[in-house]
Image (tube, rainbow, N blue to C red; front, side, top):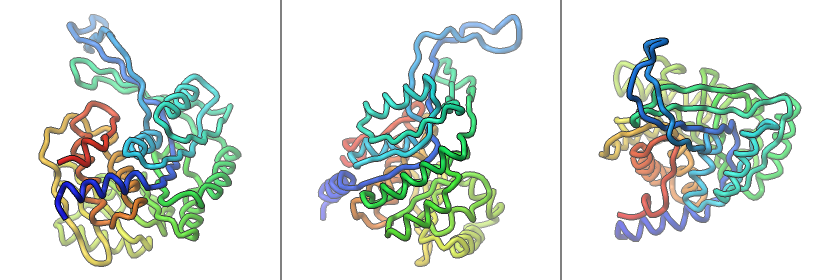
Length: 316
């Protein structure tokens, strides 16, 4: 099979995948401007804001990336009864994402505001709260109802409280025969037990298994964790070092794509979304990982949370 033919196969597979994304959504806001002087009030730059942008963040960015590859995408999450929540709903509709957003009147939608001066991030301001238990329990009931029409479940944990019932979600999805991908957060990986693939980055994995002294040490520690959590695979994203896939068959190292890194924001979202779309379309795990690595290499060349189009990913 030629490279062009295989890329076309991947494109068609991504379009077949039925992906359910669950997790913490947020609204990413960007204020762009120029810096010409330092404030007389404090040693900080003064940014004259010239334009602003709003983008889908968190699990919403995962869903946006899957939908950009033409996967049939559903997003399940919680927002507040506020302007950012309304904005997120509108933006999801514009991105052709079926969004099931539970509204918590006691909760404020998470917003991350970034101030950019001369194409560099100068400041980030976060507005966030935890949703109520009642709303989260209702989301769990909805989750089980969507499993029949799903091939792959992506659980995007940003540690904002939206995945309180993640252990039950994993158990229900696996019992239904679904592929479950988890982007983890924190040190309590026991709650991810039974998932198909876990996708931590280097710092996240180091929190759990400790610092490794060599590649052999890393493989030994990761294999012990994989067996303990009963995972089919663990995909370690390693930035400029590419990715390493750990399975019962051994390790697979995928080198990083050679390109200038402009912004790593949301790269993990792109990787897990691409992986989910391709696995949902029937592509084997090792092949899907290589394409996810390619997608991550493309998106880091863009500013902020961004997506990779089928033409960018599936063209030589």
